[in-house]
Image 1: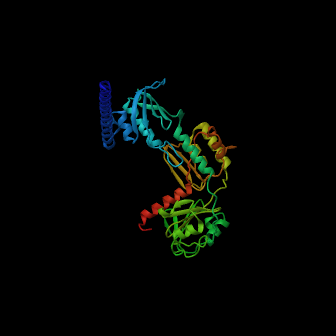
Image 2 (image 1 turned 90 degrees about the horizontal axis):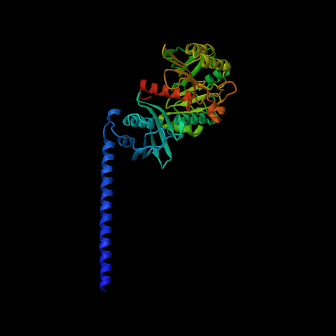
Image 3 (image 1 turned 135 degrees about the horizontal axis):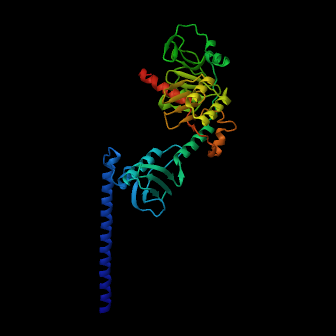
Length: 410
């Protein structure tokens, strides 16, 4: 009996000791979590005015809304530090490109680590972002995501190519405006559009107030024709200016361009783009026949060999004088053919060369199409870029918002 009491006593003591140990550990864990939460809250709300304000890797990680786990000496040859974290945002999806976000994070970490080589590792998501730095120049030399250089650029290119090759089929636009019928029958030549009414000129547009028309002409062809509230006839599909956008959507279906909440919706037909606002209808021609495209390609190939920007651009404007934007100086060039879906830029953006928009339907080089590049990204020529947006829609959006700023309430 005495022995049994001793055993019970020992078990009781051991249980109490274990309970106290568990309690101490739990308190320490809770205290550690409290400290971590306070630290995270402090860093998350701290105001950083410049990169010099960051002192630790942990600060950078928390500032970027990620979970800091640890950092340690790297066991991979060529790298000094491994940083473990749980990243909050995806690197890239078809609708979300976080390259600027993560490149900024890497830039700040590189500064804090005094430009040692490092890796940011998210084991849950199987992500490794590796940075090779040059301490003497205080710069990042190379950046790899899961071993792939130019990760974001390659993803964006693939997405843009895919969007170009999967454009929605043209809507059945029934043209009723006599002015549009006339233009289409006469290859959009301005001199075939007879309007015997006094006109004004505002910017690039001829204004015919009585007839409710605004016309922009480029190289003898109508580039854009706008029907205003004074135009009281059907333009397309029994739709007049001022028709409610919901009614237009009921007639033509979901807009392929623009959104109702923007106040601008658009559709691409076989022969025209047509955009609707509260009071106007704006029309551009669809240009899918590329005259002198072979000459354009010859100019590109010559530029690739000789790198003469001035000669290249002059050659393009000679064969295609119908550009709608041309800004240049001795240090930069911006040349745009919106209807063709082609833009040439140097020293304006990171895309130095030719950018093809989603409405471009021609070939890229002799015996090279957009589909070929999509199938094999290695075939992408130098100085060649793609934009997943329709350049006609982008221009109309600029025109619409510019007009809204000039005439509030439009």
